[in-house]
Length: 344
Picture: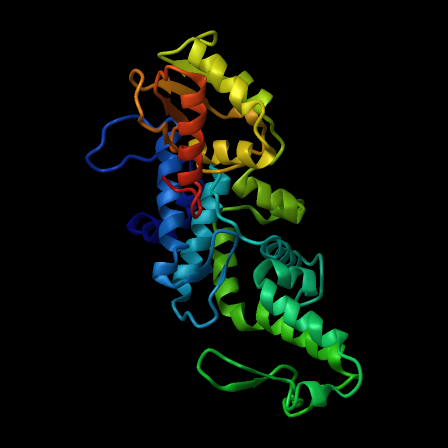
């Protein structure tokens, strides 16, 4: 936190090459230390313990009742630094966040004059699937809306318990067949934009402190997302091609068992393997050949599970005596290591 705060006082430092060294730990930073640094930072600032973001294993979003706006600016700075330094971080922001970031950039560069982006129910699904289903069900109601949802009007309750009008001057207006689409659109807009506007603007300020506006303006939302979290364009065979070995050779029996096993993995199992070893089920946007994947011998035959060093993309694999044992213990290890964001 101290280094990020210091960088905010000297913003010109943010676009310098990043070298990371942990106090009390010797060693050169060849990428693994920087990766660990960003894993720790993103876990710290986007964890539910700090209450800055609402999180689960599938998505991260802003909490509307958080007043520490500098924390969101720092989170944006961390994300920007990760992108600028080519470090992938497994942070599941919904795609709508990247659309919104690019819209704000469009406003600043004069590319668009619309103050806010259009919000759709599909985007709502990314952030709050249950609320999106509830809003969709309102649109399906036929006949007297008030008979089904008595008292439903153009207001929403804010985090402090106060009633807020979804549209200026229309808070007491009851929802009916003629205005239900307007109500749903206003509710979705409030949830995704109005209620978290200060938090989002602070996040964008931090992001743009590290990334050049002109470059970002050329990107699509999917491209910006992939710069942070990586690409899904990979398969087991491409992973095998880039694999390095320590204590094993490519033709060792255990290695042949390993690749024979994982070549039959489903897509979900393959992504689980990559997540277990690297902390993410994606590869760098520049391609899998730019990443390191290492299988390292970890002792002789035993009942120990394979382990991993996600900061260095290393799989510690004991020299098991049978393929059946390797298969059983590897699947257990992958399954047990699949919780949360994959930080190890």
